[in-house]
View 1 (cartoon, helix red, strand yellow):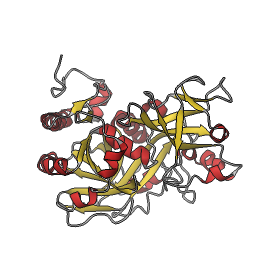
View 2 (tube, one colour):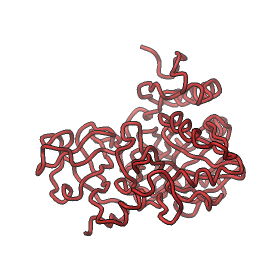
View 3 (cartoon, one colour):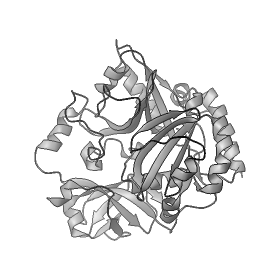
Length: 384
């Protein structure tokens, strides 16, 4: 059996390889993955759309209790697009659901990219520095989304590039839980004070994200050399995890991410994007804007995304059924991650009427039951 630390260099889809600047990123990510393997990392199955095997965990799945206490995660399944040029902000402002023109250098924002029908093609975490605006999204979506956005640049003075292999962005570490702040302050003289604030340090860029488990959650971007220096100290203090742990924390923060299996399934409000500040209803037009606005202002919202635990395996795109209406799906899994207790925790987009009935199941009306848990923020539509 092939060792997971050795990543095959077999040919991949030509478009993906060209767009991801494959040679440089292959070398960086192989070296980083080999280092993590020496630290006990386990890898999930190879993904043809990725340049490296995603790090699943470090020998076992972390539980929610362990994440709440404190964790550090090697995040290897996210890609990064950069936009440079004097028209970069205005171009993106006309494409995304959120305000890009007034995006400050000390903040990050969520945003969506919709089809003309108002359905989400991607969700981004975006931030900027003096030279570029950055869009973070799942690596599996990066190449096609980068190509799609490039098609609309036309005469705008804006250039899109893959920034994943650039030295400041080579490695992403996710840190969270009650002991996260103390662990980070061993290396950093300051931390972002509020969710979606951003600070640039000599050791990298730190973005505070939405809190999870009642504690801050941080994303730290850095060079691979810096990561190899810092990882041992962080992993000695905090529980070590991979993409699974980071996804579980995001799920408990109530922050959705569109993946390949859920593209064009939801308008932004179905996944609570406007409740998270990811939609600006006062900005100008963007693809699907009329439908997104109509969903907000005409009638009551009939669907929302909620947090659930399931004692079964589930993944994004799986359908959910209500016992009161077994003939058709009532919702869909948006994101799911193993919870360390034999099942998954998930963000589930669901009809509010089905949620009121309370008897929800995975895959069919006879499938595994969903146990609904409180979200970390108010769902206003549940009150109507």
